[in-house]
Length: 299
Image (cartoon, rainbow, N blue to C red):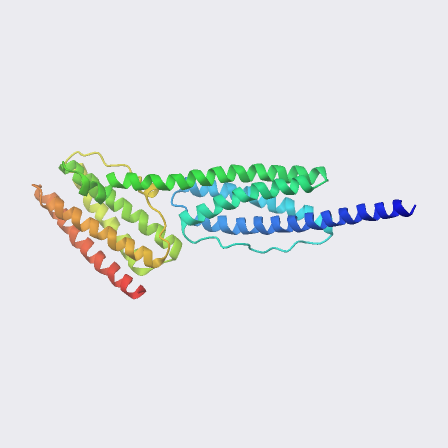
């Protein structure tokens, strides 16, 4: 009887330790899901195109389901509500936030499988194994989104001002196409900056000016019977890491624009095209001054 009592007490103590660890791990999982919900809300706002934003929100929906399931499990085990705390700091820049989320999801796979292995309850095992499978799927999607960010770097070399400056055989159709692409790109870039950082005056003003530039270019396409290029600019922009970086990108972009229009104006052009390119060159010089002043204030 004495040895049986000791054995029973030892088994009970072991189970109590396991249960305590399981509860602690489930609470940690709840913190992780709560953090993911917050991070993916930020990430969706940073996404440059609707397709990427929709995918991130779809992942967030999975995380909300995990959060609710883990909370119910914790409450059933303990009879009390868990705490909700953000663990880790989600970066403010899109690429960094994607990379952070990819690593976080990968780590979540191992952690959730470990919880499933420890749990004796079949329901808990099932929920955490399913969650681990979801986390692995999320990691694959985040890796895909990270790889997508590398594509615009190559595409930009043939788009807008960068494409014009690299092209050795300029023609009027090419020049008009490059100019319109660059105006599309500026619109998309400044839209994204205003969406993320708020209504910063120079970006709002210049964004409105770009609309006038597009209106100035479009009649030339009609007059010379040149197809209007599709606007694919949203897939080529990324969110700057800070307002200072946004100003710096604006300076760089306007310098490219000025160089592009100066190259166009060195060609043999019809008078109407020459007048529009001259107008846009002057506007780019004004924009450059505005961005340089903004950058100086950030120093």
